[in-house]
Image 1 (cartoon, rainbow, N blue to C red):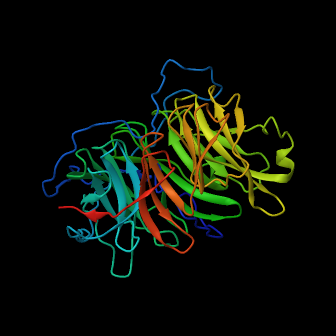
Image 2 (cartoon, rainbow, N blue to C red):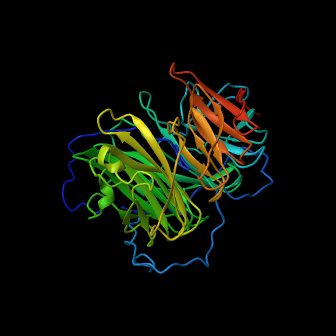
Image 3 (cartoon, one colour):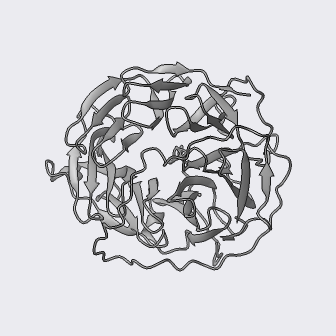
Length: 454
């Protein structure tokens, strides 16, 4: 980041991050010279290479007339750095060890990825080939933190073979590391390479990797949260065009861009140029909105969402924000809008919004009146999706109608590979956690008992 003046943040407000695809769902940057390759113990290589779960097929032919810039981004010149990994790698967990999976991303009925560890930690990376019962330890050789420190993993999982992992201090930690690594594997975690991000010029009162997202094997983005104050949630956005070997700072708090205000709730890129970003102003900005970029994240254009057709005065008494972007193409996206009564600030009304013309027009459908938005909307296509919270619903007509499936007594981070087959890392009000699986769309859930496999 170009340090043109001291960047002082007044008040730090850190939230709990779920990762994208990640955790629940990523200054100029280059890898260490030669891009080191680290060989790990021989393991079975997954035999499938599948598209990411729920990732739609893009429609290159659907190219609308846009008022936004549609040219390739001009990125800053990269600054060369050759960091040395500081200290020994984190110790691996022993076979047979019981573990907590705190984030899950399944690819098919058998194969998937997990983040987790011991005692609800999220510092190890695992791969399963038996539907989540046993997990092969595939943690990259990330340097271990100090005795009194901890780190948290954030991942993006493209398919059964290809994934990226980065680490940062957990929320509430204010020391900015001099470098962070973004690790990449293309064989299911058997071998890892890394690119390093030089953070020596980053200034802020916090440092937490926020969203990590890839449009394909080459183009990816890492958003880092740097602190908050005065209705701002400051972020830096880094981009790679070579699969993570090098990274470039394309947006930071010095950038004159509206996205620095308010809490960001989701980011997804439909292709190497087109991204969508949601956020929640909690009523400070009376117009809920979504941002769209057509130059790979360098600039973002705001699209205000119209009030629902059945409640044209909703914004007069409700504070609304957007979340859960599901991108199907460069011009097609579904988002959730959550609305809280201004007097009580309880979630009272939720809506599904869908556009097929890059945000020029929107279709709006209310979510069930008894539904309290949990993780949000999870769409497989513009027509087929799930509303995931303590009340689970499904739709087959793009949100026009919703069918009640089940009520549960926990919150969860979900991963579905079809409308029927899904997994969830769940947690209740007593602080208990578990890994569960459904084969009937959420009607019933069976508990899994994850252990480290041989």
